[in-house]
Amino acid sequence: ADSYVQLGQADRAVQLLLETESESDNYYIDCLKACLVASVRSSGASQSTIKLVATNLIASGRLTEGVQLLCLINKGLDACRYLQTYGAWDHAVWLAKASLESSDCAEVLKRWAEHLSSPQVNQKSRSVLVLLSLGQFYKVLEVLYSMRNFDRATLFLEACLEFRVLKYSETTGSLFEAIYLEYARYLINLGLCQAA
Image (cartoon, rainbow, N blue to C red; front, side, top):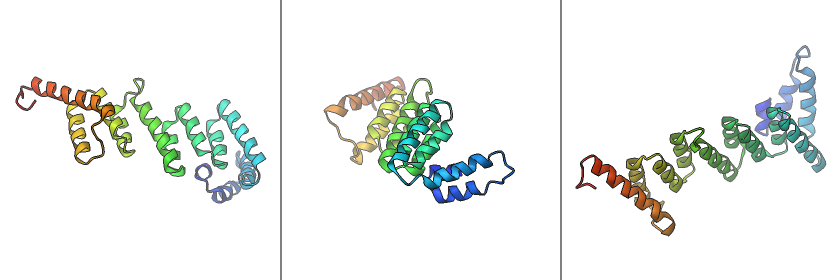
């Protein structure tokens, strides 16, 4: 039922919550949840109350419950931001891909890519894949350059220029030149002076 709530499938969530066995420890809570999910679509006042309750739940350590409430009132982007803030990156990405508009989803994924590139996480190769999926080609070059992966950066830059997804300009020129310079040094170190 929790996933259905997050995906905005309220009717299915209510049905599952009401199917909880009366002997279950969660019976009372699931019944209350079913009532809440069924009534949430009514007024703006209830939505602001639900947002306040969700924020309080998250602040008190009940992240999952707070996120569910935010999703009930169509605040999926806020829910993703809370998930990211509390380190639940995979859940945030899943929720973004499953329920957000493409621009909001891209915002969540960009933040994830930044997180993956951070020194604490240091998963720059994964960050490159996320940035590629978003079409953030200049950022891909920046990450490849920071990884000192000059051969791959050069090949990617050549492909981007060939297919005209990146252009040489005042803004991009310094990075492009730095990549080519480091690649030339790399070739010279390999003894390929003529290729450099």
